[in-house]
Structures are given as structure tokens and as C-alpha cells.
Length: 84
Image (cartoon, rainbow, N blue to C red; front, side, top):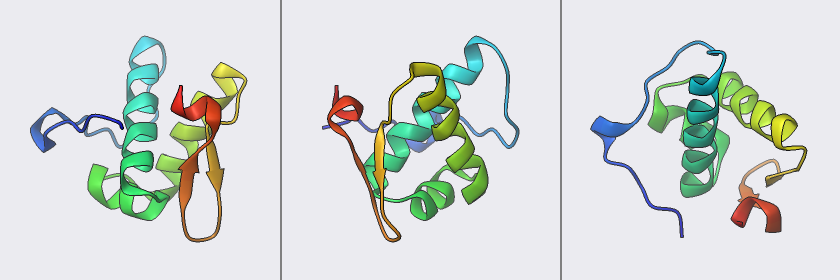
């Protein structure tokens, strides 16, 4: 199970940062997506657009060279690697 951060500790970013902070934002976005079970809910919860959430997760997957989420039209769920 992924530990949830209190709302005051969540990163509120409306742009795509670069460098080490990007990894933190992408990991937080990934965690929120897994916790909420979908991109739309994760976007609403984190205050980002759906496309920003998707980009953060895709960037993290690209950087790690692994698919972290299994996506369907209604839900996302972590892959085996995404659970690690």
C-alpha cells in the first residue's frame, strides 16, 4: 500500500519542472494516480490537469525505462514494476 501525504504536504505544480525536483513531482503524481485509481481523479486531487498528470507519469516511466501503470479507459493500476 502506498502511504498518502496530507493535502498540505502535496506538491502543487502547474508546470513541468526540470532537474531533481521533476523526479519528486513525477513520483508524487504517480503515487496519487495509484492511490486514486485513475488519471482524472488524481488530477482533481492534485490540482493538475489530466494532461499534466499523464505527462508526469509518462516522463517517470521514460526515465526509469519501465511501464509503471497499466491503463484502461476507466482505471489505472500499477504493474508489477510499479508496485516495487
